[in-house]
Length: 235
Image (cartoon, rainbow, N blue to C red; front, side):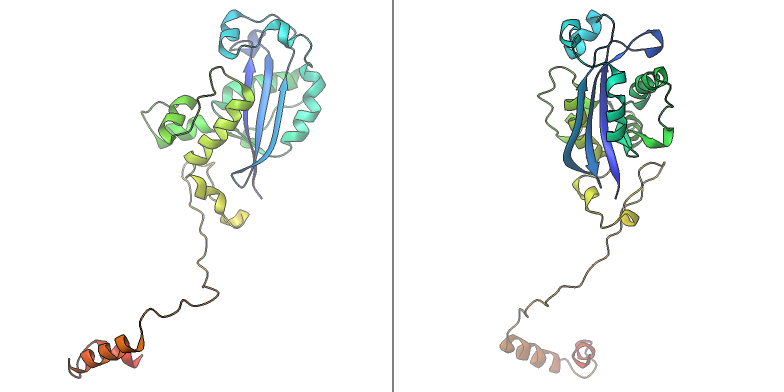
């Protein structure tokens, strides 16, 4: 079983090293590239003011966030939700910079890099020279993002899950029969899952009647002893 979390955050700004903080976390669980319906979502009190530039992006005001939990209060439940799943993130360096900074404040170690998959990097490899923003990829793959009037962590995670599935090959990517048969998309080259062909449980009925079969035999007989069709009749 391959478990992944399509993941996104919203923040007070661009750089956690300059005091910017998380204000929203959203995640959508995928099992074998298929959404399960299980999600994680929380608004956070950043314990600081909200710059107007950030408010214009996500619409989360200082007043709205004032009574929301601090990251320290939800860290354990967040880590339990993620567990050992791969975090699928668009522009992973940004979101993981904030998550790992918050974990560091609590004396906890960062997520290992091998637990993070960056869809921005995948998109740039797959569509070199083309726009690779989440909105651009929605347009490319025909994914409805009309609800995205403001950035929101859970909504963006839901959209990202759809984009990710398209990036790795579309809906058929979730049809692998076992972990061993799944494609590996973490490296520089992807491998398609190989699903073995299975025999039909019941043979299809013949499409030719006895009259058609006899007419064919008479036609072959008229072609002489060297006719290629005689080999098939013999088989």
